[in-house]
Image 1: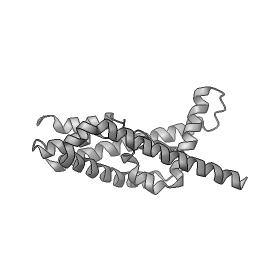
Image 2: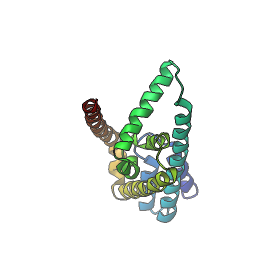
Image 3: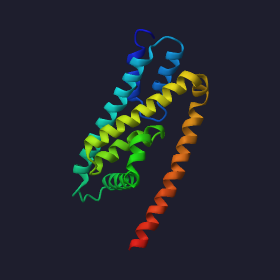
Image 4: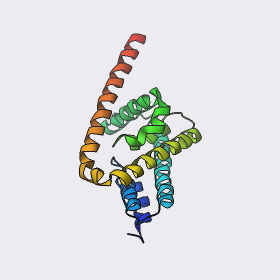
Amino acid sequence: MREYGYLVVFFGTVIDQSGIPVFIVSGGILIAAGILKPVPVILLSMLSLLSTDILFILVGNYFRNAVSGNYSSSKGVSWLKRFLVLGTGLFLSSPRLFYLFSKVIPLIGKYVPVFAGFSDSPKATAISLFAVGDLICTILFLAGGFFLGDLFISYSRSIAVLTGLAFLIIFLVISRAMKREVKKKI
């Protein structure tokens, strides 16, 4: 692990877009065990998160160009449009919060950069704010792995499910509030 631990943290974090950043938590555990050094793990975690942010911003930008003006009646295209419009609307309701804290929301939070790319948000601003959010995520989960590694491993599924449910409830509440706001304006 001493030999390939840094690569595992980097590539594992790039590949793992499912929820709790298991490889960053693992990096914290390996730091606590004295196997890896903190600075390279922090830098590689940041680099992996930022590289996926930039990739997903580009994907969102591609989708914006691909679906705008596309009047296909295909279920896939209409689902994609609805998903992107709804997600972008939610993102634009409080973009600063999503930039900074989206990574701590399992499943959905990893894909917030797609909504930033789909929107007309300035890309340089988005990348710089996501970088700050990535730093928050890295420090939070590395510290969690460092101090609470055993608990993270034992209860990672429960933590992911509970955080996902909390986000879903918040999402539904905000979604209903946005619909009411639109109905009032009509």
